[in-house]
Length: 235
Image (cartoon, rainbow, N blue to C red; front, side):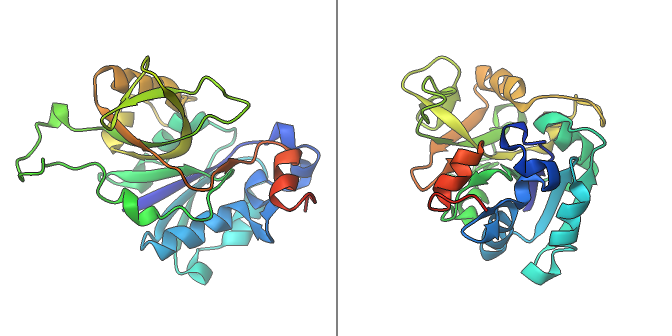
C-alpha cells in the first residue's frame, strides 16, 4: 500500500511561525509533525510515500530527502499553489497507482496510530470470500474522532461502519482515510478540489465506510495548539 501525506497548507493561523517554516516541519516533542507520520508509516510496513507541498516545499524536501534515512521511499508532488486535498490527490494520481491508498494530513498529531490497520479496510470480498460487485464496494474508509471544541457538531454519522451525512451521533473526520483511486477520476490534474463534498457524494450512495479512532489525536491548527502539545512552549 502507498501513502500520501498532505503537506501543502500555508498554515495561516500559525503565522508568524509558518512565515519561515512550513507547517509540517513544526516540531512536537522535538520532532517535525510530518516525521512522526513517516516513522509510524514505516513501522507499519508502509514505505512508499508521496508528499505534496506548496508553501516552502523545498524545506520539506530538504528535511525528508528521498526517505532512505527513515527506511522509506519518498516522492514529491509539488504544487505552485495548494490545490486542496482532492485536487492534490488528482495531481499525484500518476504516483499513487491503481490500488487503494492511505492519505493523512501532515498537521495532525497521532503518535500512537497503528497504520497497519488500514491495509485491508477496503475489502473486495465479503466474509465468505465472495467478490463484491464493483458498484457496491466501499470507495473510501475514514477514521473519525470525538468532536473537538472548535467543531462541536461533527461531520458524519456512523451506522454499522457505514458513514452517513445526516445520522446521529456525529463524529469529526480525523483526516485519516483510505481511498480507491477511481474516486478521483473525475478531477483533472491541476484543479482545485476539496475532499469533503466528494466524500459526502459517495456517502449518500452508501459507499463510504469508517470507524471511530479513540486514541490520541490532535489537530495542530494554531500556535496555542502547538504550545500545548509541547508542554506550553512553542518550538
